[in-house]
Amino acid sequence: MTAYLSLAAFAAVMIFTPGVNNVLAARAGATTGLRAAIPLLGGLCLGVPVAVVAAVEALQAIAADPAVRSWLRVASTVYLLYLATRIARAAPPTLGPQAPPRGPGWVKGLGISLTNPKTWAAALSTAAAYSTQIPDPHRLALAGATAFLTGGAAALTAWFHFGSRLARLLHTPRRRRVFNGCLAGALLATVPAMWLA
Image (spheres, rainbow, N blue to C red):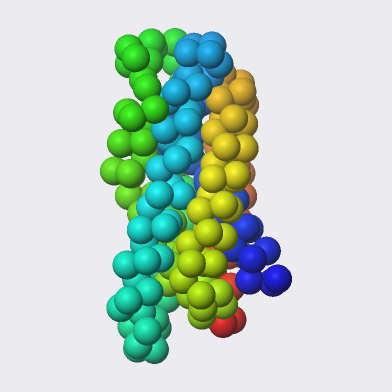
């Protein structure tokens, strides 16, 4: 049960931290209505679970070797440290009154999500970090996909609804640093779970 809670926490942090998908959701929130944005949000939301299932299935075959698992943990930790550093130093998303691309459907959202490096980092980190805690690859794929799908729906909805307000809240350098520092710290707090298996 602890592994599933840890996975859910990891998914929540990865999904709620700023990234391409969230910035697009916030932008849609600032510039369009919900009805017009639903297809885009749906496609963005589906991308991470698809990547998680693919990563778990692919890595399960090569990750049976303990040395490979250790290497994947190190690589995941290094990437998460890099990502936390980027988040801590990031400028707030630009959320102006620009119009979103015409016809942002679910296929476009799915394509954006599947070409997003953060999506694959989350998927590969999930496969590497939780394969020892949830050794059945099908359960891990299902748990990871469920965590990222439900968390993704919540995150994208939140970023959509607060998109126009986010830019106003983070307009001072101090607020931006505090916000980014909190997100970076939350991401770093997930790293020990990878090593407690």
